[in-house]
Every structure is written in C-alpha cells, then in structure tokens.
Length: 171
Image (tube, rainbow, N blue to C red; front, side, top):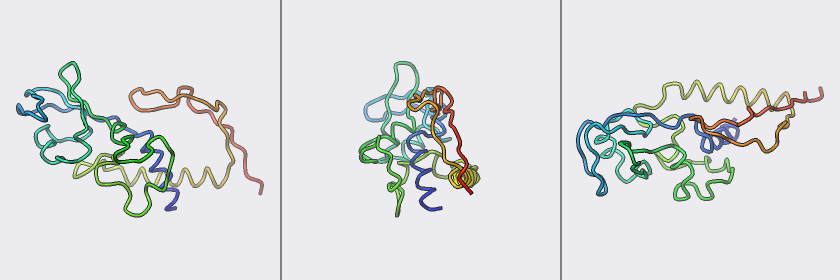
C-alpha cells in the first residue's frame, strides 16, 4: 500500500482538493516592501492571521505569494505544488517524489499543515486507499473521453466528469 499512497499523494499534488481559505489581516504589516493593511482578506489555506502566518512560515514556500489588484493577498496550493524549486519537473507524474522523507515541510499541503491541518486527513487517506485498491484489484478501466480537460470551480475537476468504462477482471 506504500506505493499506492505515493500515487495518491502525487495525484493530490497535481490536483489538490482545496484552493485555500480567506482570513483577515489583524494588523498593518510590511512584507517584502508590500504594505498589507489591517482588514485585507488573505487566501492561503491556514487559520493564522497574516502577521503570525508570515512570521511562522518565514523562509518557506508559503511566502511565494502575490498581491492582487484588489484588497487580497493571494496564495494557492497549485503555486507551491507546481513550483520547480520544490518539485523538479512539476508537470511530470512521478510518485517516487514521496519515497523516503518525501517533500520538504510545507511544500506539499493538500490537507493544510501544522497545528490546523485538516482533521479528516487520515480518514481521507483510508478512503482513498480502500477505493483505489478495490478499483484496481477488481477492474480494468479506460476513459470514455481520453483528453478531458481539467477546469477549476474552485477545485480542479474534469470538465466532462471523467466518465470511465469498467471491465471486470477475469476470474
């Protein structure tokens, strides 16, 4: 099941289940020359207010953020998960990235990280492993629409729903 979990982790890296969440800056701060005024909304996936967030994650990939034209500081999991700095050849599907110690802390965050990590992570892990195991063990399958596009609404999903054709394995 170790390799199966590595495959699932790579799928979650390429198509993370959540884009982030919004929180409000509690104080005025300056970060890398940008003024972030009190009251700005932030999108970064954790429940820390901006000042604590920036101090806690200093020198980590979370600081790979951009200021938008409105009053929002934006960060999303795709920006980090697809960064060549943390994942060489980021568009390549490579489950071996998760062997050994795996990625550096806070570079792979499909369930968040730190003390506010999603409490359902282990339940999700179990569900994904059991589903994948049963699907692969019992069926051969192929996509009905081979080149189905991925759209974001706000999470990545196949445009046509990813219909598949199942073929039971011979007994």
